[in-house]
Image (cartoon, rainbow, N blue to C red; front, side):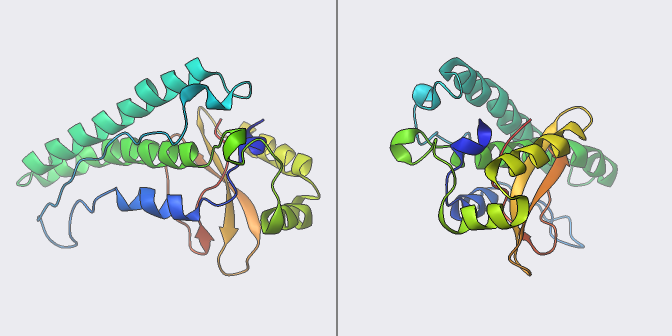
Length: 195
């Protein structure tokens, strides 16, 4: 189960992942600063999560699917840099940059939130996270039920993340369609599950 593969602390990894997405255009300027994103190495072997997740599925998802987001994001930002004198082209490239950049961020967070048993994965959440889950959802099973309901509401494909509200300290499940990704005010760091 996805929730049983939760890595207890992933805030640092979320911040590291976000720092790899460059600022593309300065406000009120056509200056472009670009750096390529790269496919992150996994901190475990493809087969390390078996039997929960097949090694072949992990390899396909990482080396092909996630890599497509990386190469497509880099290609779109190269086109954006070349279109510095064409606002219409720059605007037309933004959906591609958002889609592929969002896919890269979501996948990078996903990989870092999984852990093999040897690294603390495969066990129910403990400590403060467990307490927050109990308080908000009654149990891990209650959280899984809410995840399932929220994911079922996404048309097509998308993501669900367990997030912490930085203003109240509470947790909640947030969903994002396809590769859309945003930091809503008060919420910090995606944590769990992909549909």
